[in-house]
Length: 175
Image (cartoon, rainbow, N blue to C red; front, side, top):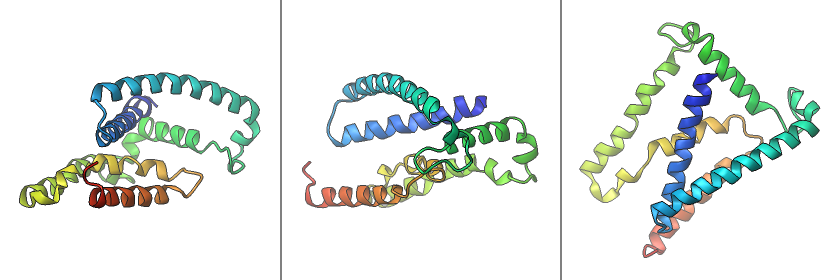
């Protein structure tokens, strides 16, 4: 559980901060202003999340304890958190070491280090393609959140985002 709280959550928050800094860069905001807005947003968001979570837990307790939820609320994220905590904490030696059942997960760190290298090398060969602007961790950062989503809108968000950015780059480059 400590790994999940302090390792995975910190990495996820770092990706969110990076994403917001990139958005600020796109709309030409000073980085200091983006950081201040992130601090204010974190403070207000934390308090709001705490209040909403308490209200939901007190009013929807039975739904959250049921295995499938009701289509609006479910305990999937909490169940996934507990499963990650147990698997990485208690059973990590029996699951993730070389030769064990999920030993491929341990190779994820090496793969994560290697994935940006082709973009770096391709940028050195073809600098006009601007492949140094491809941020692999930002793209890969959304993948863990896809498996427990209650809706299928994530693909549409990605398509709309990529299409709008391609349109803006092609027809409104002066922005």
